[in-house]
Length: 128
Image: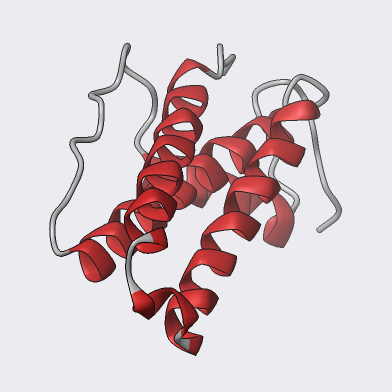
């Protein structure tokens, strides 16, 4: 299973876009000083940074590529949720460019790899 990382990159770009829109929105509101709002923005930033770090290594192994895809999707999901919760509306998320395995399938493959040592498509194997 090879990946171009295009959907992950799209999700990560969307998360960044929503984060920027959220920050612009919050700068005009006193809620930006509330602990839960600050925590939500911090959580989103951590998820974006984690996906960025995984993207830098996504070509090194199949497991890292899958981890990047899952992290980018989660960053986009958290961004959308935070924006909806704090701004009261949502921003459209781009549709996938091409068909990729479903996130649930990728999550299962990665879990099976780490838990049971199942090999991934590029021959990565773990220890049982």
